[in-house]
Amino acid sequence: TGFMISLFGLLITCPVLFIFSNDLSILFFDKGYYTNLFKYFSFSIPLIVLNSFLLSILHGRKLISLYVLSNVTGSILALLFVVIASINYAIDGALFALATYQAANFFVTLYIVWKKNIIDWSSLIRKIEPEIFRVLMGFTLMALTSSICVPLSHIYIRSFLTDSLGIEYAGNWEALWRLSGGYMMLFMSTL
Image: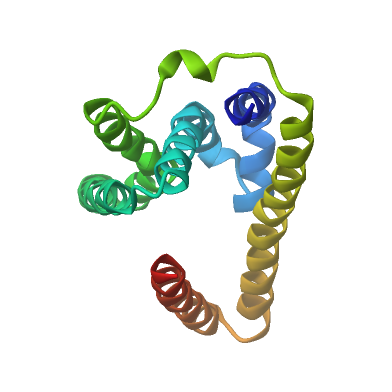
């Protein structure tokens, strides 16, 4: 049921991102120069979602060592990908890498799940169970709300700080936010 909800979400999200890529580029960057960035992102989203789904299975089965292995390996590969793209293509490479690096983590997680034979792949395509669907849709709406509201509020705050105090203050705020997110993730992972 969770897999089918994920597929349904992808069928809506990917075409919307691709079709409105120019509008999104203008909305977020004030110019259409980054249209292709949103198109690349629309193609990487399925792999990002599938990676999250596989990680959720590892976490749900309490295979924490495999979960951590997948995340750490994926993070190291992502770091290499972002650094290489940034060095070779400057800001365009960095933005492209940030839009697509999480998709590379899918292949790491898939390899781990496949190698350890954790999933009965035929069980992913089944009839949707209405009661489980109802419960999961509550979580889906909660996740959707936070995935829309949090980034938009960050964009608003950064824009406000840039306009009011300058780019340096906005950068400091972003740095502190990232540090806070890092130690909170570490704390939550331990829990």
